[in-house]
Image 1 (cartoon, rainbow, N blue to C red):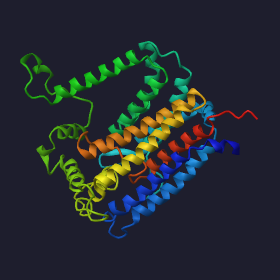
Image 2 (tube, one colour; image 1 turned 90 degrees about the vertical axis):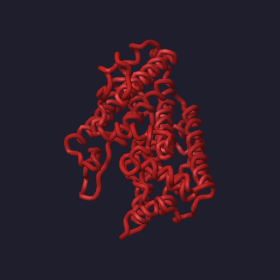
Image 3 (spheres, rainbow, N blue to C red; image 1 turned 45 degrees about the vertical axis):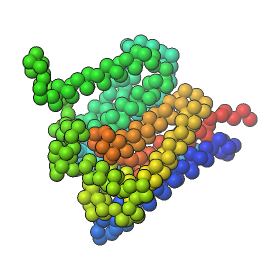
Image 4 (cartoon, rainbow, N blue to C red; image 1 turned 135 degrees about the vertical axis):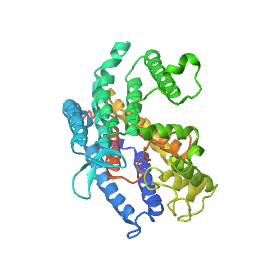
Length: 386
């Protein structure tokens, strides 16, 4: 990389990225202290390793010209499918899902996390070649099939949360690529309506006589996924079972009040009433111990981080760079909105972690790879003329 490109570096984006990484270690130092009694700081030390190695990944990708990825589109897409198929054939299972490929006895990777980055890189090239050619319904078919194949492999694991992230990435990138907003938007609205009607028919108990044949309509979802949707509507229906997670999360956030209970002074998290409080429900710990002030501060950091990402995408030197930025922005935004929504009780539980904050190696590496790609776009936003 030409050193003159460093003048394009978005320092505010870099600063707020490091603020999020620092926040991850701070929050984990209280959220995970009682998870491993033998080594209270175990998760913090491991997360620090993921962060440091992730910074190296981001730096390497930032120095690599993002345009060169276009030459390897089909190789990357093929690698993505191979890794997802490997999960089906050789994957290890935990908590009813098969999402990991064991590398050693104590280390495994989650290909679905990296699949998000692979699909952003490859779909960006796929759509960049079709700009101005996404006006009709038939033009949407190939891009949809391009994303659908890896989506189905991820859904089979089962991993509904990451499947929905793929959908968010696809929708965001399609609109920016120039898909006819009325026709594409109409398809989305129709799809959401069909899903809504299907869910209503599945859960409804007092249907009119002429609809009795459709009552209990079977859906291609796991039982626990259907229970999560049912509990979302009425968490109090099963306070000690499927509704336990969301009730404990709401109590934790609500009990924090304005200033919070204080660092390591929470009850729901510290006494392990709140499940998965160092991963999916880490935002609940922020609400309980740091209160309204803490949650607003964290969300403000995310807001600036995403707004700077938007600025980088808008200043990209070509459509390919803008589409990469759009995919990454869609991914991060969806993750934050859904995680905060599910921990607050306004969205169903989907198991989507809070990016750059929740504990997890594959997720951290994938997120840092996304940041590296954004920086690569940012550093090359202007062509060097001499």
